[in-house]
Structure formats: structure tokens, C-alpha cells
Image (cartoon, rainbow, N blue to C red; front, side, top):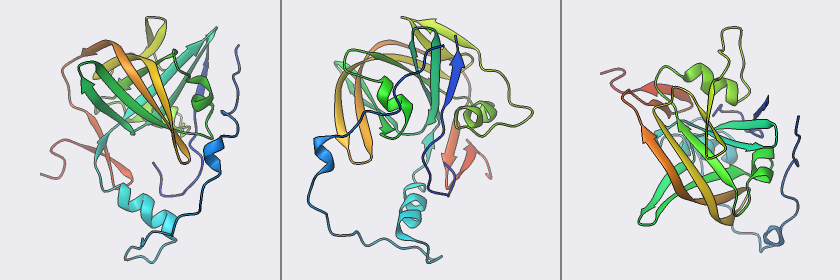
Length: 201
């Protein structure tokens, strides 16, 4: 979410399990080097930063992706979440391959998606590793053995049906097993900062 390009932070919650730090090498890592894309911005930034800023012009919601194994809940903030299909009900999350979360997800396993409300920016920061003095302790509810962030605008539990290579990310296609939504306004992310519906109107 910040402009600085760095591996995403994640947050573990003791419920004393420590998982792998990644999914290891992949045969997809060996491929012909593609021609560099034509990417720039008015600031003259490094192309990687310019690409990140340009992608950030697409406004998204903010989610927390969660998984549980044994006695630990693991969660990370992500905005790369999308619906794929209503029949069968499928969703997809894109997870950086350097993160522990990527190592925790596997075909047949489950993950939770909590779509955050407009008043949950501090929780988003906590799951992104940006903690402050006033950051609340998260509350979880378990559904199908999967943790979901309490008070969120919407909740999904999905079982991983397929996983796909996506460059420095892995894509996890999940079949929805549980979905609920509540009234409220979503927390949005655009241009490297949080936004809310109607802000600036």
C-alpha cells in the first residue's frame, strides 16, 4: 500500500505454530525475459515505482486475508481480491510469493476474506504491519475453522480449488463456502491512501 516498494508485512496472532516462509522455488521462475514495459510518470520515478503508482489509480476495497493452522491465526492486508463466478461461486486472491501467507495456502485448504468497513483503517494498518499506539486488538470469529475479522462489512470463507503462478505473486482460486454481508460503508484504497465513499464530494 505505501509508495515504497518492499515485501508486504504480515501479522501472526497466537491462538504457537510457525509455518514456512514461502512456497520455495517454482519451475515457472525460469522463463524468457520479457521486453521491459513502457512505464513512466510525471515525477520521473523508477519504472517499478511508477507502475505501482499507476496501478494504484484503480480504486479498490481493502480486505484482510486470514488462515488458521493448529493454534495460530495468520492475517495480512490485501486489496487484490475479486469475484470470479457466481455458478459455481468462486473468488480469487493474489498473494505475494515472498509472504508466509503464500506458504500457508494450498489446494484443498481454506482462507478467509474480511472486507473492511470505513472505520477499520487502523485494523488494516495493523495487518499490514504498520502499528501504532491506538491500534485495536483484532477480534476474530471462526467459521468452518477459518478466522474472520469481527465487525467487517463482508465475510467469505473459501476452499482453495486451484492455485496459479502469477509472476512474483500466486493466485488462489477459492470456492466460496460461506458469505455474509452487513450494512455500512467500505474502506477504500486509491493513490496510496485510504478513501471513503463521498469523500471530497
